[in-house]
Amino acid sequence: MTATRTRITIEPDHYEPYAISQAIVAGGTVYVSGQSAIGPDGATVGGDDFEAQARQAFANLDKVLTAAGSSLSDVVKVNIMVTDMSHLDIIVKLRREYFTAPYPADNLFQVAGLAQPDWLVEIDAIALVKG
Image 1 (spheres, rainbow, N blue to C red):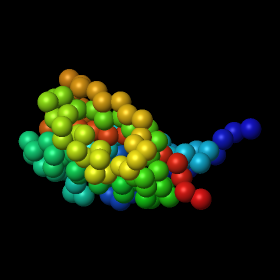
Image 2: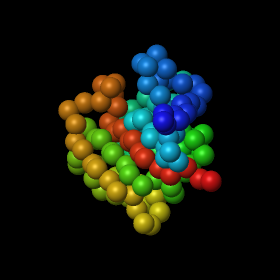
Image 3: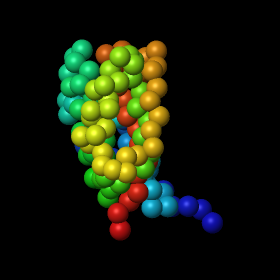
Image 4: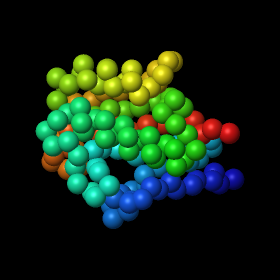
């Protein structure tokens, strides 16, 4: 038996040229690719402002989850990648703002770099699909 997988996209789809799905729904779960501070025009939002970039990444995550029939409150696992761990206090503040108790399981990584050199944060998630 082959599991059904459904590709989720939002427009504009800046992932398509790289052969990446924004998310895949399978078995009542949505698996969201890393979301960064990409604005609707494809440019990075926020410049060197970590919090502005993180807020855009969370907004993008929310849009993809909504398109998949899920929401930030349905997230069970999140991976947050940052290029500088000194922003931990901002990450904790935003986790409390965007997620609800019980808070999702989390991995927080400091990485040497992300897909674009001006990105400071990227967030991926696993969530339950409503219904």
